[in-house]
Length: 116
Image 1 (cartoon, rainbow, N blue to C red):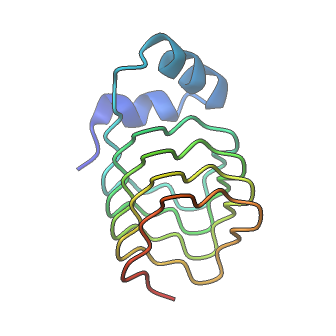
Image 2 (cartoon, rainbow, N blue to C red):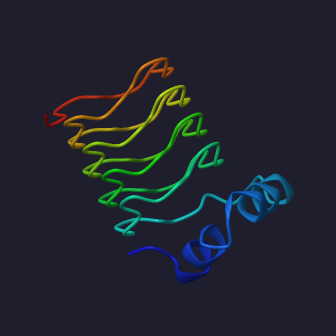
């Protein structure tokens, strides 16, 4: 389950979130099973975040930093991931039907058992 403080921080907006991440680079946010469906997460720094089982359907993650993010079993149906950095991210079993991955960096990304 998502850590309440991490989710509350994310809900304060991208500028507050990214500033917090910059000042706390050693923290790996826990947003597991969070309901972020339809959220605007453009350019958000989710580097190393745990988003396992999260609902990100219809979310805008364009140009987001998802390096080493754990997205196992996440629902990314219809999500906008254009230009996102997914280097070494774990998308095992993620749902990606209708997701826009145009221009996304998928270097080293684990897409095993992804679901259309």
